[in-house]
Image (cartoon, rainbow, N blue to C red; front, side, top):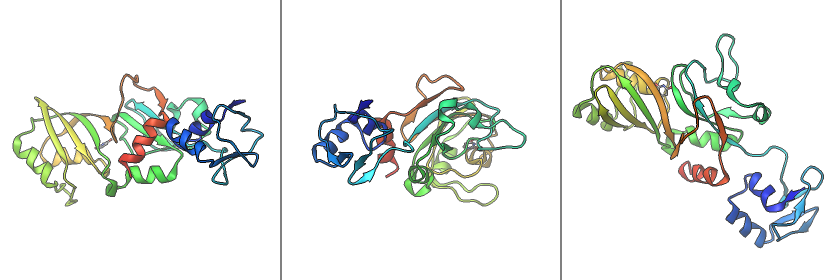
Length: 235
Ligand code: URA
């Protein structure tokens, strides 16, 4: 048995305050009868809960954050290498989670997983301009010309054109790079095009989310509020 409002936020239909409104408007029914009181206890395994007549339950929408260590490939299956899926705790393994975008085997940091195909698609679409912030240690030191070249939209060595990006030198051989697209080896190739070979790369932020104090190799589920913010950024 669990509270109806808790079940509804867990089902990913909105934040606590949105769920309150949804209930107030009489959009939720339990076994066909409209219920407006979120404190009512339900048994989702046996009772049918509907939103606007559509049954809820089954697969719960989830977004999980991993602090990826180096040495794992971003793939659901690999014949040689360890994959990021192996870092998901057992409880998350049967939720159809897929990595959102890709971090190279050597890259560390923030990697999201979700079982919501639509949100996944929007987060990786260059059209949605979802910002990702990387910390890089690299050869050489970034100059104002490099900063401008990033801003103008770099041409990679193979002729690929990049969208405008932000380069912030933060010390000798250290920079923060903000990009809103996800081409293959993008940051390494962008830096290489300016003769700054990347020695270490970590994704620190994506869509406004930070790693916080999540230890390397650890995962945590995003809260409904965080998912709501992701939806807004990738709208
Ligand atoms: N850019 C890269 O070059 N590698 C990553 O893993 C992510 C962005």
